[in-house]
Length: 120
Image (tube, rainbow, N blue to C red; front, side):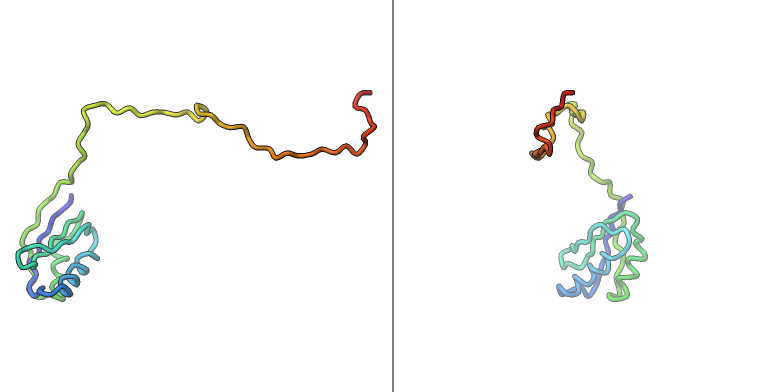
């Protein structure tokens, strides 16, 4: 199941520190996307399948002490809307289409015995 994890990260005021926090989150196993949100851009939103939120937060705390989990929620993946009209698939057999004849390069045959006859 895909999870959406929101982590509050303090001391993330510059672009360099934001990109560092995003790199830490991106290398964790199962992470599909990472984004920065919030009014002061101090929240890291991580989505992925099989992401351990506690392990992820501990990894971020090594560089940014005071990081805390705000929320963890399951996210359902959006499915494509099913068309009400039936879809028709065409099946092409391998011999149903026009196949050009094979290309044979022109070759010349020389008879070493021009006066010999083929009929006996």
